[in-house]
Image (tube, rainbow, N blue to C red):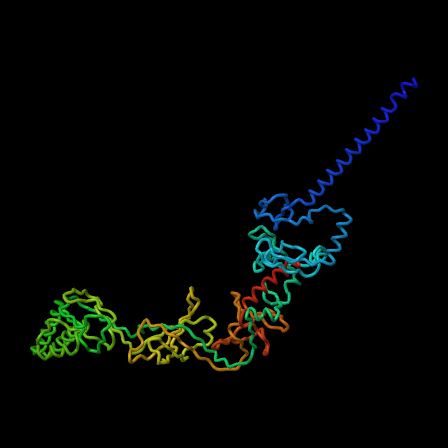
Length: 518
């Protein structure tokens, strides 16, 4: 028995040693594999959506929510850390690291300077630390004034909503909506002197200057319709001869226009001569009044048919009829209508000619609502026309239209102008200058104004590179300067050049401030 035990003891010892070695080898291999997987997972590339950071995957592609291209996330952000070390590191970063954000895409935030992966703009340092951003906002207990789009600060809503990209509008609280600027969607900006010189920024002071209250507008020469004479035919007939054969010809008062043969008119002449003969042959004094009434009735018929008095007198003297009646111009002027040719038949009521007196014409000017306060009936205005470069024509306001044009929102102002030489042709356009009373008022260059659709604002230079947007109320304009009724004080400086670049930066600053405050 002892011999058998002693025989198997070395083999048993060898088996135990081999088993322990195999177990150690397996444990070491598993640990190495785990380390390899950990290293591999720590160095794996992770892609995330800029607009929806919760979307992450290990390969490039598109976001399943918004469809944007996924961007590569830094490897160290995917490295697993212990809860304790991660909390300590985040606390350290929140106390010492600034955050940088894209002005156009507020969702893009990182802890170092760089470019936006969407639009390529430089990231801007956010106010406060990351810990400030992570703290719950105390504004949640304040009253919401309105909601603003994170992508376009000019788009606001009184109720919560989403923009075109599906992003929620950000609340703006009452204390935030007041801000430092009285211009909605704009904020004060700081521009260093070097950059001011680079963009060509210029400023000018608000100062007192003479304002005449005058304003300019466009005027158009038109015919005075009260000076238009229409030659109409009161009896049917045939045109035998035409003396004035084209439109635009100047005629004098009494000048022949055309002759008309009318059987009815010829019969009326014969009737008149017969009535004269019967009156003369009458020997009964009791019937004299009757014959006189007949003569007068026929004579009035001829006059009503526009037979001239001279033709009637000649008929009484010669006792002969006239085959064709000659029509003459009733006024001196220009033929503005001709609708007759020789041999034409004219019906009763036809208008073959129209003659217009152009010695006085109208100039119709458009006046906007603010300008109506400076023009009245009797106001004198000066006019200039390209066709008359060396002349200044003076006119007087005769009428102001009480109804504004719906499309242009202007009222017609009518000026009467003497035109004895007929230099002003109907249809000509010119510039009309209305002059007001001169006065001293606060003014700035008109180049400083930025329109909003409902008003204007300017950027006021506060010194040390600070510029503040400020709404202003305008008065009259005089030359290149405009009157300021409210918003500025004498001596303050405003931006007159590169102000639209300043305005763009102010808009971005306001958008960024809205994001930071919410």
